[in-house]
Image: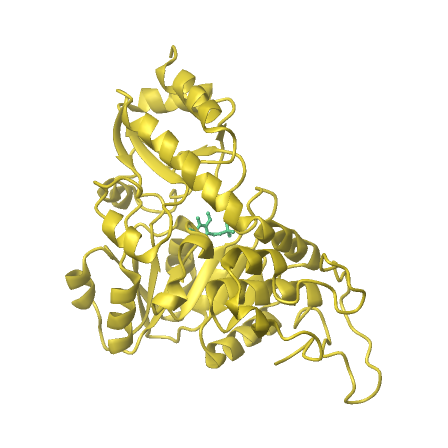
Length: 395
Ligand SMILES: Cc1ncc(COP(=O)(O)O)c(C=O)c1O
């Protein structure tokens, strides 16, 4: 094990509950000073005592003690082998896609986050990789979509924003039978509710900007891998691309992770209350929420997750109502992003999914009357009261 190997062995924490692991992280304290909050090691380089005699740290692009604590904490929480912290979810995904060689194909969820779509279509197609978008709920379609050159299956579950649920364990088996890697974007659930590696995934990616950070104040990305081989590859990516997370931002994430379990519980509790209220509104024509028993993915959610998360999408009766809601919301903020303390309402058509073609958006249901909500940690009654005046108030 590299770096800090002369200090506490973090594997001793395997028997702890998730909440304790989140609070105590990997080392959980600074081995040099005993500080119970891992310090922000704001340094670019590290002094060596003599030739072949160092602390194990050389240069912060390669590794930094604050970032390493975050990376190890995320590996513990996702039950993977090693973690890597990047400047954003986009940077994390870019690193994952560098596993591709010219000629390789990737099968992806059809309503994948717009930024992930752009990485494939705008960048890696220029280097000879191809990207096929399919409905991951349809396992027969997926089985029939593999080719000789398929190298990777990449999915979000639930998807953002249509909340489609994919069976991770079934897809992992299928991907491995075809000699492919399975990558799961676990941004919407966080490891508190869903651990894709335990279900067979090879790589987990996060926009850690969302629930991992949790406070709408940091951009970050995480990759956790399940093998030493993939870990070596990812080390090489960070070392070469220089896309590593800064010490200050790593510390902010560590701080956020300590409350991840309590935040996720309250996010989910609030979301259930808001979803029930939304469903009863005349102007809400359709609701996409994985916590409802009649959601097509509900049973798979119950099988592979321990909670339903904070995300709700809705179709309202008209574009006029959309405009009214986005103008009237007050406590709830009209803003892009999700997973933070504040409740946000997003218009995917021109925000998160503007990179898709209009035809694809229509096919998926990302229409001009479609809105996405990330339910925050305010009191549920206050969120509902604000949505009530926005949805049912005067135009
Ligand atoms: C599911 C998902 N994956 C990846 C990303 C990209 O992450 P970031 O904005 O941190 O670059 C986002 C951003 O919204 C996202 O929602």
